[in-house]
Each structure stands twice: as structure tokens, then as C-alpha cells.
Amino acid sequence: MLVLGGLSLAACAPGTRPSTGPTPAGPPRPQATSIPTESPRDWQLLDWSADSVIGISSERAMRELLAGVQPADTILVAVIDGGIDTAHVDLRPNLWVNPREVAGNGVDDDGNGYVDDMHGWNFAGGADGQNVNHDTFEVTRLYARCRIANPDSVPADLRPRCPQISADYDQRRSVAERTLLNVKGADQAMNRAVEVLTQALNGDSVTPARVEALQPTSGDVRQARQIYMQLASQGITQKEIAEALKAYDSQIRYGYNTDFDPRGIVGDDYHDVAQRIYGNNDVMGPDASHGTHVAGIIGAVRGNGQGIDGIAPAVRLMMIRAVPDGDERDKDIANAIRYAVDNGARIINMSFGKPYSPQKPAVDAAVRHAQEKGVLLIHAAGNDGEDLSRNESFPTPVYQGGGRADSWIEVGASSWKGLDSLAASFSNYGRNEVDVFAPGVDILSTVPGGGYERNSGTSMASPVVSGLAALLMSYYPSLSAADVKRIIVTTATPFRDQVVARPGDDTPVRFGELSASGGVVNALEAVRMAQQMAQGRE
Ligand SMILES: [Ca+2]
Ligand SMILES: [Ca+2]
Ligand SMILES: [Ca+2]
Image (cartoon, rainbow, N blue to C red; front, top):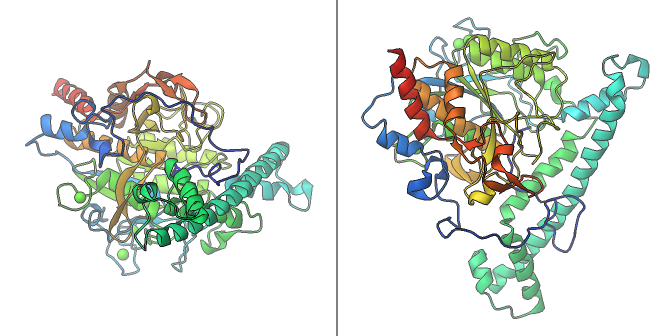
């Protein structure tokens, strides 16, 4: 599942009070006057002391430490995700182009097993060019296997877990059903309110400022104004409701549907996890919105007068499509990691996760392969507002049966909304499970069709760290993946004793309890440390 976050509509339907969702806000918290009231543009790049927002100071690092210095290397970053808009003007010049492959000739020119793989590969598609768009959740697949007609044919290793899997499936599905109802209610109420308000505003577009200033002339308008302002005050827009409606509708229609199985599209021998060669070369796929956004945060072209600047100044982006709408398959993730490693990636960004991983040993083996080849893995912690020591989000750096991947950074999302909201309300966390936090709220980046939008999620925080890792490797090519991890974790700005609202339930907690470093990544300090380490080796 792709890990976008930020919007919880479980409690937003006007006039309803559902049993799940965020706790109501407490008394207003004091805010320092210097805290911006709207998300500053490109805030992830900014500097706390210079710009009053806790970005990663990457622009300051470029300005003060790296001005006039040419990167020594161009770093290949693989993005395992849902697809990328290969035509986006702010990405296209930075796409990886497989140097030994000839496009469109139907031949695997470089002999890597994949035909016409110019920018990467798509493991969620078939040889005929068809793609998996929606897929089920992993819990649904396991539940379906537990429920097959002849209980004796349920695999012996699965059987003892079936009662727990069934209970979890029922619980998750009923939460999704309730939420869908709430979102539908909110959607209808919002649409009706906007209709009434548009009329009352004589056709002007409906904005919070205009609606607030509006003097209601009838009960209808007064009610519409109240509904609109109630949602707006929670930062919920018509567009977000429409997106949530689509997402929850798709969860019920596909994600939790035990009769739905799109895998036939891929046409692989699905249960052979050692199978490597299948899929197609369509790295855009049917919905590239998530992957395009992630890729831009890392490597949108800098200084071209277009849109946004990515963090990495000398980078090529390899897209490996393996994450449909639904839960990714372990086999595809294992193959995606192997493809990235075997075709030269130095960093792999993984903005996805799921609570079950039935083929974890296959993913572990691919992770070990990445570690052996010195590839840095960067993973989003997930958006459930949960403690990862109690609720795992796979893949994890901990191997089944023991041992741990060293060159792996687990990333939580931080916000721009002031120190007491430093941890994003949706971010997963863990004293031993999460390494660092990085900006992941209201991040402006590239979207398909050439545009730019703001998105929130640990999905956005992970590529901030991938971009920083690529920046460090490009200027200091002697650094290993393990060095880069150590630098990023060691130099994170420490907020260990800062009391923040704990994601998920708003309980006051020290920021240091939410991750191993207790910090937010800091490019300025990271570059300083990298410089010292590189000098020490000369
Ligand atoms: Ca090839
Ligand atoms: Ca070819
Ligand atoms: Ca740009």
C-alpha cells in the first residue's frame, strides 16, 4: 500500500460522531509568533534559524558549503513505487536511461533479462502490456487462503494463524466500511454546501475566506456555511474528500474483496518466488500520481526555472513499478530490489508498506543482496499513527530468523506546524524501529501531466532522506552506504527532550521516544560531517 497520509476522514462527517478517528483537539496550544500559519513553499529545503521552519537546510548547505563545487558523481536512485510520469518536464532530464539497452526493438540488448527496459521495469504488469491497477490487501489474500473449502488443504504453517487473520480481516474491513459511509456523508454534505455557497457568492469560487465573510441570507446558506467552515477548519477540502471517497471505495471494491484477483494479468507462476523475469517496460502504469510525486522530491531538476527543486543535485531516477492500488506483492518487491541493485542503483527509495508479509524470506534475501552490494535502502515508516514495536509495517530491516540490515534508514514524517506538532499526526514511530524524521506534510512536488501538488505522508518524508543521501554520495563518492546512514542519523537536529503530540492519539511525549535518533535530518550538518570523513581518508 502506498503510504500517503494526512487526511483522516473517519470523523469528519458533519453531525456524526463515528467510533474511530482522531481525538478532538484539546485547548488551543500556544504558538510562537514566528511559526508560519500556512505551509511555506518548498519548506523541506529550508533552514530553522534562517527561515523559521524546520526543514533540512539543504539549500543552506548548497549555498554555504558547496557553492562552486561540482558534484564528483551522479547518483542512481531507484524508486520502487506505483509509476512515474516519464514526460514530466521537471523529471525527464533526470530519468535514468539504461545505456546498453536499445529502445523499442523487442530485444533484451543488455542481456539483463528485461526487454526494452529503458527507465526501469514494471513487475505489476503482463507481457502483453496490460497492468495491474487495483489489487487486494495482503490480509485479504491470507484470509481467502484460510477460508478455502477443504480446511485440510490450508498450508500447515498458515493454519494456526487463521483465527487471528480472520479477526483482523473482519475488523479492518468493517472500519473501512464505516469510514466509507462517513466519507460519503461528508462528500454529499460538502457538495451540497458548495452548491448553495456558489449561488450565494454569485458564482465566485468558494474559498474559506469568502465563506467566512459571507452574511447568510437564509437558513440554507447559514447551514451550508457552517458545514463548509467546520470542514475547512479541519483543513479538509472538497478535493480531499473526493480523493478519500475514491480511495475507500476502492478498498471495499478491491482491497477487501476476497473474490478479486488481478494476478492473471501478470501471467507469472505466482507461487514460484524465485522467478525473476516477468512484467513489462511500462514504468508509468495506469496511475503514476504517487511515484511521480516521490520522484520529484528526490530529483526534480534544480534551477531550470520550472516548478520545484529536488534535493539531489546530481541524480538519475530509475523507476521500478511494483506497487498497485492495494498491497504490493512480496515477490514483486524482492524482484524490484534485485533489479535496482543489479542495474547500478546506489539508493533505493521505498515509500510503501503493509502489515503482513507472507513471503518475507524472499524480500529478506533481496535486502541481503542489496547490503552485500553496498546499496542504501530508505523506507517510509507508514501512516497509521502507530508504534512500530507493536504493529510492524513490512518490509523491515529485521530478517526473519534473526539479524538486521545495517544500510537501511526507516523514516517518520515531521511537520512544519511548530515544535509541539513536530511529529506528523499520522506518522508511525518507534524508539528502535524508526531512525529519523524528515519533512512529510504539505510537500509540493511533481504530479502527472506536468503539474505540481502538495501531498502528505511518510511517503514524502522517505524521498527527502533519499535525496539527502544522493546529495552526500554525489559530493563524497568515497562514502559507503553505511557511512551515509551513520552521517544522516548522527547529524539529525536533536529534539530529544521536545514534548510533542504523539501521532495517533495526541498524548504529550518526548520526541526522543519516537525514533532512535530523536532528530530531524539536517543536510547542513550532514555535509559538514561528510566533508570531515572524506578529508580524513585522503
Ligand atoms: Ca534489458
Ligand atoms: Ca531493446
Ligand atoms: Ca525544477
